[in-house]
Length: 394
Ligand code: GMT
Image (cartoon, rainbow, N blue to C red; front, side, top):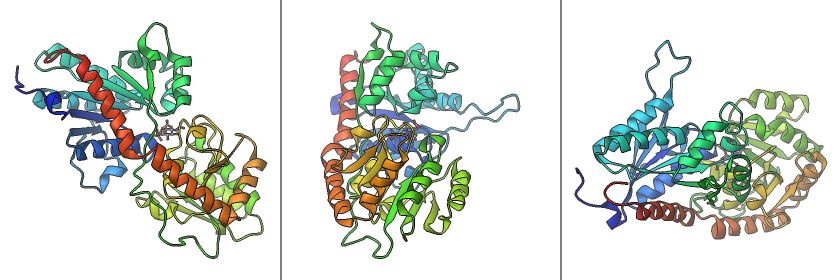
C-alpha cells in the first residue's frame, strides 16, 4: 500500500470534479463547488476539456486538468472524454482520489465509471466513489434520447450516489430511468446554491432613473426561447422607453437579433455577450426574465434573486421550486405570452412592487440557497459514501 494515512480521518478529501467548461449552469455549479471545497481545505482536482469561465479569473486552490486529447484524423471529433479519463487515472495513480463527482451525466459519469473500473483493476489504491449530479437536459433531452438512454441509465445505476438539482428533475429521472429494485431510485435532491456575498443587491437606489430595465442571461439555446422572450417584451413595453439587456451567447443569438429588428425594438435591446461581472448587470435591473420551454432549476434566475431582482418566468420544470409565484416573482403558463407580458408590465413599470418582490427574492436566496449550506450537503454525501466503504480497499 502506498498511502500511510487515511485522509478521511482528518475530514480532508481528495475530490475530482468533472464538468463541461460552459457558460451554462452545470459548469458554473461545478466550478463554484470546486472553489468552495478547496476553500474548506479539501484537495480538489477539476477535469474538463477547457477552463470553465467561472474559474478563469479566480485564484482559488483548485488544480485544473485540461485534457483536450489528440486530434487524430481517424476520429470524427476528438474524444475529450477519453482524454479526461486518462488524466483522472494519472492522478489516481500518483496521489489517489476519494471521490469523483460527475456533473451532467454524459459523458462525465461514463468517464468516472471507466476511471473507477481501472482503479479497481489496479488494486494499488482505494478506488474513488462516484457521485453523479443530474442537471437537466442530461435527463430530459440528451440522456433520454434513444441513442444515449441505455448508457445514461447504466451510469446512473453504477454511481455510488446520484443527486438532482430539483424535485422535478428527480421525479422525471425516476419516471424515465428507474428500474426497481435497482438503486437508480435513490436520488437525493440538492438544489443549486448561490454566493450571496458576490451576488448582492446594488448599493443605494441602483436602478436606472430613466429607463425601466429587464435583463435575461442564458446560453441562447433553443430551450431558452429568446425570440419568444423578445416578442413578450415588445408586447409589454410598446410605446415606452423600457430596455432589455441580453447577456450570454449561443446558437439562437442571430435569430434573436433578427427578431429584435423585425419587432422594431432593436434600439431598446442591448446584446451584451458573455460577461464575468454579472452582479453589476443583475442588481440594477427592475426584473429578470426567463422564458424557457423547460428548465430543471434556473440558476440564472437564482443569481438575479440573490441580487435583489424579482423574476418573471414560465412555470416549467423546477422553476417553481426556485421562484415563489406572487412572493418573489411571477410565473405563467409556458405558451401564454399574454400572461407573461402582463407579468412583465406589472413589475417593470411598478418599481415599488418590483422592489418588494426583489427583497423577498434576496431573502429566499439567503435562507434557502446559500452556497455554504448547499456545499455542506455535498460534503455530507461524500463523507457518507466513504464511511460506508472499507479502508484501505473497497
Ligand atoms: O441541462 C442543461 O441544459 C445544461 C445545464 C447547463 O449546463 O446549462 O443547465 C441545466 O443545469 C443548470 C444547473 O443545474 C440548471 O440551472 C438549468 O435549469 C438546467 N437547464 C435545463 O434544464 C434546460
